[in-house]
Amino acid sequence: MFEDEELYDDSTATPEETIPLADVIALTQELSDARQKAEENLAGWQRAQADFANIRRRLELDKADAIKYAEGELLIKLLWVLDDLDRALKHTPPELADNGWVQGMEGITRKFKGVLEAVGLKEISALGLAFDPTLHEAVACLPGADGIIIAEQDKGYLFKDRVLRPSRVVVGSGESTTEGPA
Image 1 (cartoon, rainbow, N blue to C red):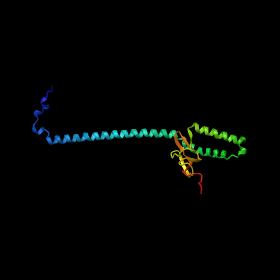
Image 2: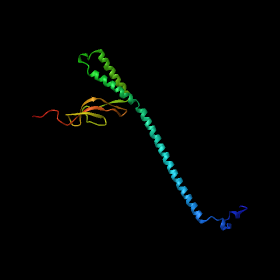
Image 3: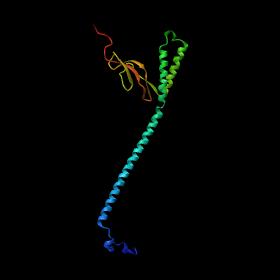
Image 4: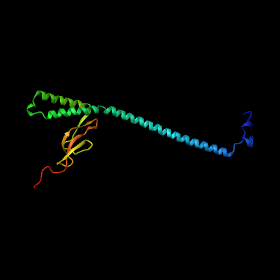
C-alpha cells in the first residue's frame, strides 16, 4: 500500500496529537448547524423560485387579459355615440319615417352595431327580466312586479363575456301599479 503506512495509522498517534473529545463534539455540532442552515437556505431559495414562477405566470395572464380587453376602453366611448344615434332615431317624427335621410341614418346605425358586435360586443337583455346586480344598475324603484326590470334608461353591454357597461334600469318595487278602492 503506502510506503509510510504508519503515518496513516491512528494507533501510532500520541495523546498530544489526538483531538480532544470536546472539540470533536463542538465540530460535530457546528457541522450539524451548518447542514440545518443549508437546508433552510435551500428551502427558502426553492420558495423564492416558486414565488417567482407564480409571479411570472400571473403577469403573463394579466398581459394576455390586457391585450384581450384593450379595445374595451375605445368601445365605451363609442357606446355614447351609439346611444346618441339610437336616441335621435327614436325621436324621429312619424311623418319623416320614410324620409331617405332618416332611412340612411338607420342603415348607418345598423352597420355601426354590426361592427361593434363583430369585435365581441353584446347587448345585455334587461326589460322584463329579474334584476341582476352583476349586469344591471338600478337607477330607480317604481311600482311594478317585485325585482323585475320595468324600464331601461341606458342599454348595457358585454364585451368578450365581461360587463363593459351595466344596463341602467328601473326596477319594480312590488307595489301594485293600480290604486285600490278608496
